[in-house]
Structures are given as C-alpha cells and as structure tokens.
Image (cartoon, rainbow, N blue to C red; front, side, top):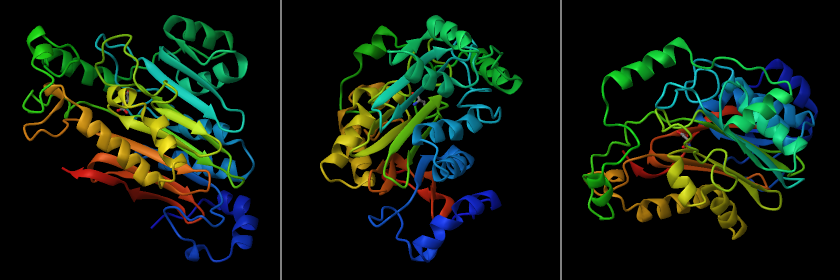
Length: 352
Ligand code: ASP
C-alpha cells in the first residue's frame, strides 16, 4: 500500500481528488480513465516522486517537477549513486551525468562527466533552456554551469572516499579494463567469463512525470558506474538511452548497466514499443529480452549463460499507464499517483 501524501499534498490536491471520486476505486498500474498525475522513478526516488507529484499537481511543467524531485536525491549524501556523495571514478573523482527532456517543447538538455556541481540535473535543464545544444561535457559543462551561477564544491564525501580507497587497495579485478585475453575470449554464448559485473556498485535516479493534461517530462541523473574510467559516459545523459520523452506517446528511462542501455537505445526503444501499442511494462520487458539475447561478451555472462548485470527500465504512457521491469528481480520502483506514494514490484525477466 502506498503511504498517504503529506498534509500539504492534500491541500493541493483535495479538489482534484474530490472530483475524481473514490480513490480506492482507481485501477492501478495503468488505468486509461483519468489517471491524473502519474510519477514513476527508480526505487531510491520515493521522496522525489512525492515532490514531483505535488508540483505537477500544482501546475509545474513536468520536466521542472522531475528536476525538483531528483534534486532531493542529488543533495542527499547518503545516496552514493547520485550527486553529492556519489561514488567516484577510478581516480577518486566524482563525475556526474544527467539529462532532462520536455515533452511539450520536444527539447532536451544534458551534461556528462561534470565535476564539482551538486545538481547536474539543474545544469542539464539550463543547457536545454539557455543554449541551442543538447549535451555539454567535462570542462565545458563545468564552465557553463559556473557562468550560470552554479557553485563549485567537493562532492566526494568521507564515506565515498573510504569505499573508493577500499576498492583501490584491494587491487580489484572489478574494473572496466579488459586484458587482450579477456577481450578475445568474448563473443561466445557460453558464460563463465568471471561475472565481474554482478557485484559492481550501480545506481542512478530516473524520474518521469505525466501531468493531468497528459504532458510528459523526465530526468535521469547519476554519478555513473563506481570506479569507472575517467571520462566514461553512461546512458543517463544520452537522450534515447537513459531517457526519452515523446509527448504523443510516453516517457521512459533507465538505471543499471549503462553500456547495455546505450547499445539498445533503451529508453527510445521503450517509447517506440509503446507507440506500437505495448503496455509500458511489456515495452520495458521486450527491451530487456533483446539485451539479454544480444549480450555476447563472455565477461558479461554468468556460468549459466545469463547476463551478469542488472538493468531497470521505467515507463509512463501519455494516457497514464505505467510500469517498470528489470533483468533480475525482485526489484521495486517508486510510484506516485492518486493512490498515494509507494513502491511497486517491477516485472522481472529472471529471478535471481
Ligand atoms: N546507468 C548508470 C550508468 O551506467 C549507472 C546505474 O544506473 O547504475 O552510468
């Protein structure tokens, strides 16, 4: 069951709820009849979906509501997958990726490998609104952020530094470089390449908003794969991979192994499958099926031949149907609708 909204939420939404009738009578997981505001996010986004829901209900544009929601997570040092306190790259430096996309204007903005700025989602929003570009990276992205008044600060917290040091000192094999032997060993359907991916630290927040008028917006923000090679860009800032919004169809995003999402054009493919009539959950599952069958490199496969990493896809349709799916369950995602704020189970291609 979802937890009830805050008192403030009820003040904001009481009119909408009264006109919608009995809350418990609302079908879940994708009603086609007047679903109102629908917000979906990765499992770390419970507070974020609540905030985004309240703002969307009060008339904030979906993309702005999405950024306001994920900003809570970016500012939270306890979440080591996003913003402040994110786990760093191979050199111990936090590098952030983020993207935003606005359905009604069909515009997007993104930043990649951005250092020292706590809110990459807000910089991505500024790229969207104040440039004629879509993606800024590294030094240029930082200069742009500072020009727009974003404050530089150290993002590596003590807890994240200590985790990085533990990894560094263990001379771990869990890195992203392949020896010539490992590179050549790939491309077999047989697993057993070490499965070094399944224990890697991953995490991100993706959050998509559908407002009561059916307009859509979304945001994905992350510190990326822990211990990544400096300069590595994941799926999160790539429009079509970690996020895609088509105001006529739906919005989708991803968390998990970004390389797989990039190779499958994940979020865009989910939206295209929804355009073809699939329910959001089934569209997510179909993309995961493709990823599972097209992963050929042995170091990415387990002994049993299944993929050795996890990936989550989230989607909401223009009509307000929503769903999420992962390669390996059980896994939950965050939802805010008229029924309240809650976690729901994702559909899973495999059980662990
Ligand atoms: N998708 C992110 C990336 O590849 C990481 C994650 O969500 O775990 O950068």
